[in-house]
Length: 96
Image 1 (cartoon, rainbow, N blue to C red):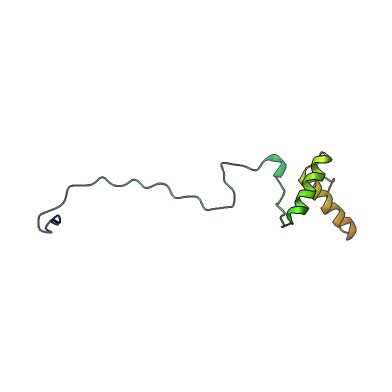
Image 2 (spheres, rainbow, N blue to C red; image 1 turned 90 degrees about the horizontal axis):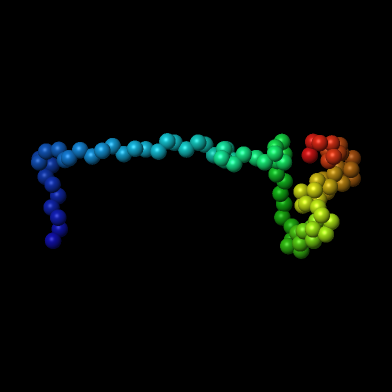
């Protein structure tokens, strides 16, 4: 058997406490204020691309064998690209 709905003429229902609302979220700016950029990334931008797994593996092996980071290899590649095309070199100038 179904429960009966209260009549609209029976008077007001008992008071219910107001619901507390959470403060509005901050707009998404792409980074969280809880995790600031590490000092090594301040003033830099991310550069990305897609490589074959074999090419990535080759870079990883070269970096490990030579005690380098992928970051330093990419900086060297950008420097070589700039030199090849007659662009101003930034690597080693403290700007990269």
